[in-house]
Amino acid sequence: MFLSHLECTRCGKEHRADSVQTVCLDCAGVLFARYNLDNIAKHLSKQSFQSRVKSMWRYRELLPIKDDSNVITLGEGFTPILQLRKAGKSLSLKNLFMKDDGLVPTGTFKARGMASAISKCVELGIKKVAVATAGNAGAAMSAYAAKAGLESYVYMPKDTPNPIRLECEIYGANVSLVDGSISDAGNMVDQVAKENGWMMLSTMKEPYRVEGKKTMGFEIAEKFDWTLPDVIVYPTGGGTGIVGMWKAFDELERTDLVSGKWPRMVSVQSTTCAPVVKAVQEGKDSCEFWKNPATIAAGLRVPKPFGDYLIIRTITQSNGTAVDVSDEDMVHAMKDIARKEGVWMCPEGAATYACLPKLIESGFLDRDETVLLYNTGSGILYPGLI
Ligand SMILES: *Cc1c(COP(=O)(O)O)cnc(C)c1O
Ligand SMILES: [Zn+2]
Image (cartoon, rainbow, N blue to C red; front, side):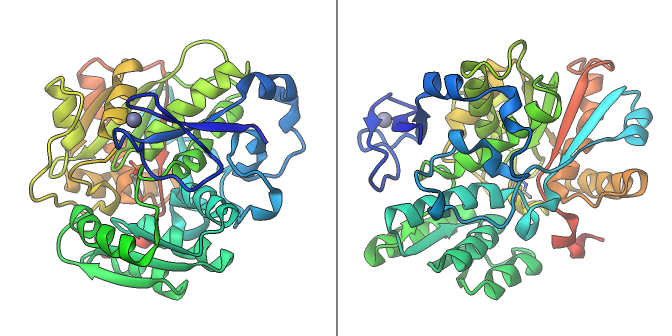
């Protein structure tokens, strides 16, 4: 077990990792798990992974659970990276790839974060968990809570796509439907959770979902033979994925598993809910609240991410950028990829493909570069769009 402590990403204050923690006690910043990376470097090499389990738990030393018996897993992670030959050719991109997290349990990459967070809840003796969600985090939490035998409470917008709500219900969660967006759900649940002693697992308001999400970055490195692509395009809502991958690259470098250049990170959002794009364009280091957030891409309907400063820091440090695409372009891209490549991406994932013409036109992308699109979930959860 190499977890050493938790560190505030805003003020740097250290917190203990062996008791229940949410956000920084001093400044309410997001807490990150920190490890004894020097010890891990001595213990791990690229060869270590050859015979390991084909799930995100192959990176066991860099995950925060002390005792294996507390790990709650449904086999999440180690998803394929597919070369998109036809789609790439249509844009004259020579090296276009997609990592397909439509293949994880519950149908979205949210399973990664919840596998890690729920396992840690089991380790800390927590019995009841709750989340404010745009949908998919609720479905994932419900599944892992069911497996772990925890009570779960999900607060989600009442217009969340029906299959996602049904997922929560079949796994036995207590579902509350809220008027408005994930922010309104958050305002409702925070007080109730406090009164009832529920552990809140909302995005970045506890330290361990990011730990599961960072395995996306480990897998990208390993599948590219311990190198990193030039560009990663990521559909950004609350930001755990992009922030998690950036944390992963740092840990891989410090444990000597990768060296060389890190990717430029691109956030893509919907034109009708684009707080990160607006902040990046205006050179701000946090987001303004986006009024009337509306998009078919439920996972991107986040009017003000709690970890906004970490998302923007990642984009800036990586020399990346943020772009928006319309909902219509997402649906068009979804159909185009399905026909060319045989994958039904979720609209969030399809946004990464839809924004490529913009990135090429602006000169951000060079046609020879290795570009990885992150498909965060399966289109089957959004049948109403077709
Ligand atoms: C939550 C979600 C996103 C956004 O992920 P973050 O890491 O929170 O930015 C993207 N796509 C889907 C399908 C999601 O459920
Ligand atoms: Zn702090």
